Image 1 (cartoon, each protein chain N blue to C red):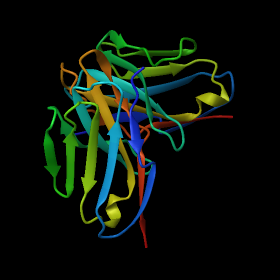
Image 2 (image 1 turned 90 degrees about the vertical axis):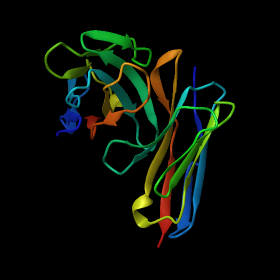
Image 3 (image 1 turned 135 degrees about the vertical axis):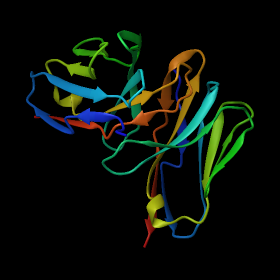
Length: 111
Length: 115
């Protein structure tokens, strides 16, 4: 079945550093999305991408929908403590009604 | 302007008992998704429902699990004869749109512990 591979699984960074994470699949998706989950809460949508090649920003976050429609990346610039959490990529396709989630990238900030 | 409401937030059951998890979508949303999350893992799709219809249940275990979204009232995820492996966080999400945009609004989850 469809599967999303996220990397890295976890990251430890210094406050102020830029962060980059990505998501790949062997399947084509028509929609790529990035969500963030804080401890004990449900995921919250950060960015949604609908067109191959699309580059979208939301504050310090930037995400791109890969040209092949099989990958996406998320960048966070100048990280701050509240960026800590788990980041999930998700994909939707016209051939399936469900939204598939990756296994997540856990972001921690070194004191 | 309430978001997606899930209850109970925490539920403890003994093996063999039944668990019922409820989800009230955001006002005006008629599409509901259920996901399961094991500790330190991602979200696994279980089922997608619209009012009175199951659209996609390909992620639901064939036995003991069922879901409904009646015309009136919340969506219910029911797990019969629970086993320890059912212990997880169960998240509900709702969407207002007919198209599959992936823009989901999640509840805070129901955490099931099976003793």
